[in-house]
Image 1: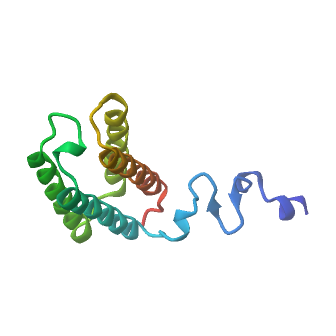
Image 2 (image 1 turned 120 degrees about the horizontal axis):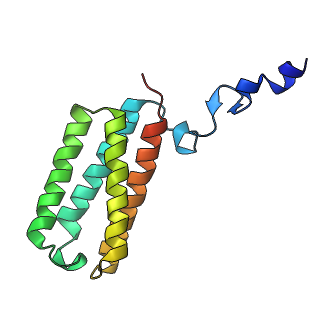
Length: 143
């Protein structure tokens, strides 16, 4: 009777319905499949690329970042978005890339001066988005 109420000891870390609490989050209710997570990642990359191409310039980032580098990075992000949308990539590799990039962005913000308010906000938002995506990609079920 006790096992019917409390569950077996191996099941106690899980919520009813088999949800793993360690990897479950609010976002996982809306992003259920690895292909959806890759599409969301592609959309984030595209949004960052478009933002860099349209709204940001050399004055928004520390020296030696110039307008040319901002345009190149924006174009590369758009190319990455198209690649992810059409081809996809393995979730472990994508998660690692997102988490490493988020960490580097935070370090860049912490140790560099010369960001405009808009540039710092963009880098911080990108780091936060990549950290959330990377975490979700690690926790996503494998098909």
